[in-house]
Length: 299
Image (cartoon, rainbow, N blue to C red; front, top):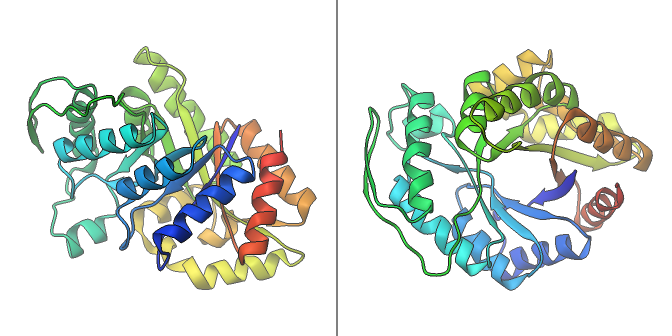
């Protein structure tokens, strides 16, 4: 299982972001993922930071599809792929209904249909093919070509059965969030694996994201996460994921404990079928460094 981390760019200058990527590479991690929030453009940031730091995969996790037309997304992704010498992976997803509708004004009536059509248009564009696509939710025409850029892999955020089928059928894998190893083993891996096999595609990547705290006070870490990010459980997609696992909130998904407990939890994700574990350490710089070096040492 590959080990990666997430770098959240809020209030970080570019030099600081590059420093985080360098630290991840120095710790022996395989990848760094950049979420699209209200600050840096995640694709541009991944491309620029990846060019500064060789030898590590850079990826987005995730960029919402609605605000970016497939032609635009393809151009941006191919640019990042060229800048990084093919070390860029594009993670996309429909995002949350509240953000897409209330803040950006997009319709969120048919997200699964939208994602299917988006991928059907995007994949040939990434290959540099001429596209004339007319679907029920979008139209895409033209061609995108970036000299020297190979098409990057595409991961789809998928938390439910229908999106997991799409990820297996049309993408190269999935990125999950707020899922314990048991959910990966029982819900994610079988669904996406079956869909990929039926579509004649290679075994998909399963990227599991989790918060982690290397601490002697696991309950305190969970309480801190509940106070900081407990609102995430109010998003319908996350609420459904938590309910399927019988969990009250996102704080119950955290890896928290001493070195032995953290190592054991990492190994459970590997046994569950995750191909990648994406860790977001809690605490300051010292705690983050300890977590990442411990995770990278787990074979």
